[in-house]
Every structure is written in C-alpha cells, then in structure tokens.
Length: 209
Image (cartoon, rainbow, N blue to C red; front, side):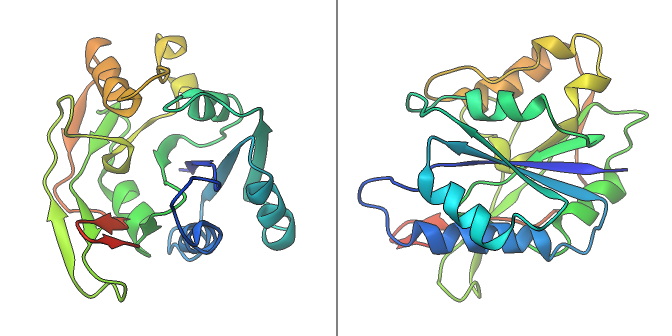
C-alpha cells in the first residue's frame, strides 16, 4: 500500500528564519521513514529557493517529485489540489515544509488505516517545545473546524473514492480545516487512530523551530 505525502513549499516568508534548512529537515524526515512504499510530492508555490534545493539535493530520488506552479494568493489550497493530480498512493497525508515526521509516522498510519472499512483517519500530533526535540507537547485534535488540520489526517486518494472530484482544498484562510469538513459532508467513514503517529509541529509558544 503506497502512501503519498504532499508538501507545499514557499520559502520566502518575511520574518521567518532558516526556512531552507527547515525544508531540508522536513524532506529528510520523509526519506528516513521506516515505511518504504512511499512518495513525496513537493509543490513549489512560485518559489525559486524550493526549486533550487530540490535540484541540488533530491532530484536524483525516484520517490521525490517537484511540481512548480505560479505564486498563489495567501492561504491557497491550490498547491495540494495540483498534487492530487499526480499522486500514485493509495493513502495521502501531508507535511509542512517547516515540520518533521518521526521515523515511524507513515508505518503507524499504514498499520491502523483499514482502507476496506474507512475513507480517512485522524490522529493527535506533537508540538516541539525545544530545539533538541526533547520536550514534546501532545496536541489533542477533534474532527471539527478550528481543531484538525492537515498535520492530523490521512485519507484515501480521491481517485479511489466515489465523488472524489469533490475532494478539494478551498482558497482562503482555514482551507485545511474546511477540507476536513468536506470529507465529513461527503459522508466518508472515518476513525481516530488508536496509536498516535509522529507528526511534529515545529513552532510552539516562544519557539520557532
């Protein structure tokens, strides 16, 4: 069962530091997954830094692909919608360019996601409190607007679902919350994972990872 990971990337955000290093950290956390049947789709949001990093470090990897599109408006879900068109996985999950996946994240999802019974799953995630990743805060999430974003979901590839053409991200603030609401509105079956996966959000309170 292949898992596709979608990562939107724009690395020229004013006031944010070391985004190129964080991008490499994120991609390397995908590479280091114990689960092997995987692919990473990087969508460059009009970002030449992303394009160069991909060419310099990852273009020789068969399971990492880059899509480069024109710069989108803030809070656009278009990057993820574009990625849907080329994903080959049975399951899709997400990674932000400044976050990290623990080594068993994808394996934990694969072990608990029974695609014959459920269409999507959700899970709690972590926020790191220090640069050494020694202090992690468990963030409890719930399937409602304002609580559950892309760090906390995995779903079947829309190509495998009835009404899959309706599974799209909106454009505007909160599009990740609204995406989950779309899954609910379509009547798709879901569950919370019994065992927590390892998505690590790398910004919390006074620490910007």
